[in-house]
Amino acid sequence: MAQSTIQPISLLIDYTPAIRQSAGIGRIIRGQVRALLAANPGYDVRLFVAGQVSQAEREDAPLPLHTIPLISERNLIRIWHRLNVPFPRADWFAGGRAELLHATDFVLPPASARRRVVTVHDLAFLRYPDAAMPSLHRYLNTVVPRSVQRADHLIADSQHTADDLQELWQIPAGRISVVQGAVDQSHFQPEPDPARQQAVRAKYGIGERPFILGLSKLQPRKNFARLIRAFHAAKNEADLPHQLVIGGSKGWLYDEIFATVQELGREGDVLFPGFVDEADLPALFSSAEFFAYPSLYEGFGLPILEAQACGAAVLTADNSCLLEAGGDGALYVQAESVDSIAEGLVRLATDGAYRRAMAEAGRANARKFTWERSAQQLIAAYTKAVE
Image (cartoon, rainbow, N blue to C red; front, side, top):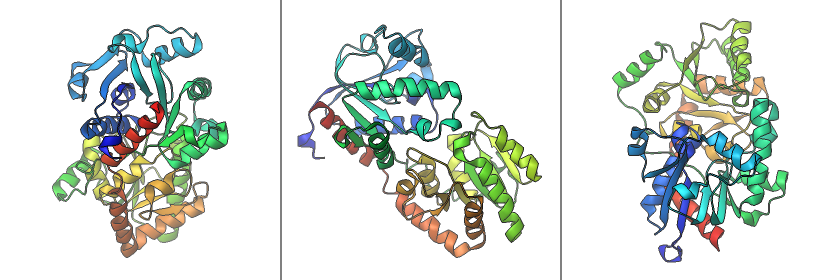
């Protein structure tokens, strides 16, 4: 968008997920806000956070953080949506009423603004209700529809999520803007230093064997149980020397994942190193044979782009937004078919030329997803919201 078409506005952004969530949505919000400020659209931008923040978090933020003291994010939402009590209002703690409020994580917080924008990252809680804890499903199914109804404009992370909003809730297309995430090309890039790769492998106990990397919080929607079954089938079919490394902290309903490993007798071949520090991700992606991400449903697919940017070939599923994210730089499989996933694993593990071609195509694809591009999409959404 040309700079001359941008209208200056006072903008209040809920920065809470950027502080509370290290990956995923938090990483997207941090990247978008910093890119928005770098684009310098002439906005009066204020950030607020529900609950307390540390001094380190304040210093890391791109602008001063206005906090709503003594109230957590979840309790703030309960007060506003369940009791319909507009106190404490975020804008009271953040310099007064804004022209535009951006609720960045599904739910409108209590604040006064002439226009309100809500980002809906995905509708997984509707598409796959059994993949979430019942309490979380009830919560989202209550507050998200209310927020969508109250919002003047909606932001979706992908065209697929925008399509879901139209199909499931009959939201007119004109009320939705697609603002995609991006990948930090300065951080996520191939790690050329073998010593650094080796140090990261040692840190997470990976050892010297070639490995296939899976990465996400352990929960049903990520489809790790089928990935493990497919890995078992692939090893039996092609006598692969690989191990499967699934990084990520425990989320919810993850017992099936560990039970599948035990059932198949693959305890020596499947490793769960736990949470992986963001600083270690480039070396981990770079040292993996390839990245496997056959998720059942995603709103954007950020790990695909991060893996591609680091030079890793990618296997992912042909559903939801994953085709948008992976582009021409991924091998697509059917997420609900163990045989399809296994076939993809065998191809990437045994065909070096194909794997290298996918890695090269993936890097080209990831370069399209810049934060500058995301900021321009965000500015266009804000402009549409206040028209």
